[in-house]
Image (cartoon, rainbow, N blue to C red):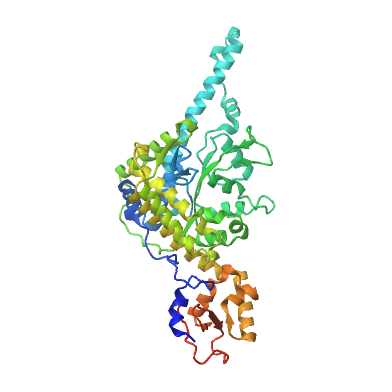
Length: 488
């Protein structure tokens, strides 16, 4: 046996796909708070301190609320033919008692206040129009003194009430709301379990309700079977999503076959923040008024600029060449490892796109007054990639936990070990090519089983090209001179 080729075998990007990935599970590294602009960092740290909540929970929520404020009003011009909007799909899970609801209540309050104010103005306009219409018809009978009742105003507004944020939904309900709101909506929930049940079709005969979310991520057109909106065709819907829930709810979400199979999971940036609940004390914890006022003014400013804007009013931001190159390099990293990462379903396919969305969010926060007058630079892109890498580490860690309960993986392991018990040492490529026992997306499991001592692996090549073989440890059919690989 050519022992000199062992290192080549373990590092090779050959058919055995034995590589050391730069994308690994990581649920310990803290959120990269330093890459946030000073205005966001100050809010995140202050809210985390006063609410005794993990910064890993608060900081992503700050980004999610900014994302919801951007709507369709600003977009990023990249090296791709289509623009990128700063609209993220986010799901953060934590232990009950970590103040996720109170944190979201504070951070999202400017969204609710702005929506309330816009609805108030809209109501006044409707009332004025009704009085004007009535006056024209009834002028001779003194109709100018007439005022519509609350019921009459409500009936006139109907489903056309200005809406920025919603929680529970049906696809038909979302389609209707989107049709009256320039085809943009932010979905926000601090109890994602009910939303996930609806998504899985609990109130729709088990039919998955995720199609409109798929369309909303990419800005695609949507036609609803049950035509309830005045405009039955939605041309280019956009949505942002911010869900908070328990760790068990996130695991249910990740494990759902339709959510993964239809590509919805890959559109989400998700993380499990399993920090211990901090002990209480008698200190009077109060949000500083300067923080509250600054946050409110900042979010309201974004909403005034970017929510409910016509296409002609959309702001466009361009990227520097260095920033584009950083994103290209980031994408190519996982493209090179795509076979090894295949077990993550389609998650890696959206990593670069989500990094660009975070980049636009960071850019707007750095240049809130005129983001279009500044190129999105290398530093901002680097920060966005750091945020995305934090999510990637958490996502992979979540996926590893869930896969232990995946019956398909358990069945695959049974088949592999049964075959090796009966047939002895086998080439890795034979397991998935000739015998079709090991699916390609599960190739990485061989390395895990070797590292845990459940399988023995060695390079059985007599030539230059590596040829990895595996067997059950202790099998007397393993060559006596085999140099075992313990950490592929």
